[in-house]
Amino acid sequence: MNNNYPKGLTTKDLESYKQSRTASLDAGNNSSRLNILESQFDQLSLINEALWEIMKKDKGWTDKDLLKKVQEVVNLRVVRAQSKLSCNKCGMSNPSIKSSCIYCGNTLVKNTQNSPFS
Image 1 (cartoon, rainbow, N blue to C red):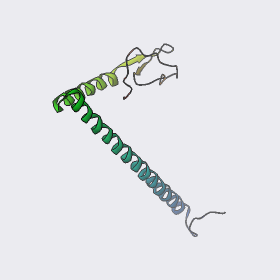
Image 2: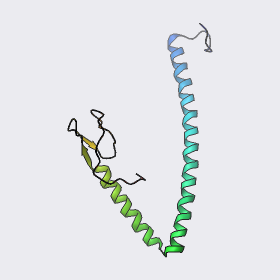
Image 3: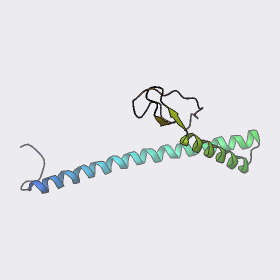
Image 4: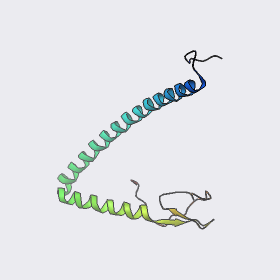
C-alpha cells in the first residue's frame, strides 16, 4: 500500500487520522475563502462610501435620507424572500428567488420584479 500515513495505525486510528487531515484541509480552504470575502467586503464598503459621498454632494441627500432608503430596501427584500411562485409544470410552490422549480426542475416564470442586488 503506497500512502503517506503513519505506520502501525489500527483501522480506527487510520480513519481518525484521515478525518483530521481532511478537517485540517477544510479549515485551510475556509480560511482562504474568508480572506477573499473580507477583501470583497472591504471593496464594497469603499464603493458604498464613495457613492454615498457623491449622493450627498450632488443630490443634497442627508444621512436620514440614506437610512430611510436602506429601510425601504430591507422591507422590499423581506417581501421578495417571502413571496412564492407556482410551477407551471407540477404546480408546487417555490421561493420567488429560485429560477427553477425545486421539485421538478422546470424553469419558473417570474411575475415579480427582482432587484439586481438581491
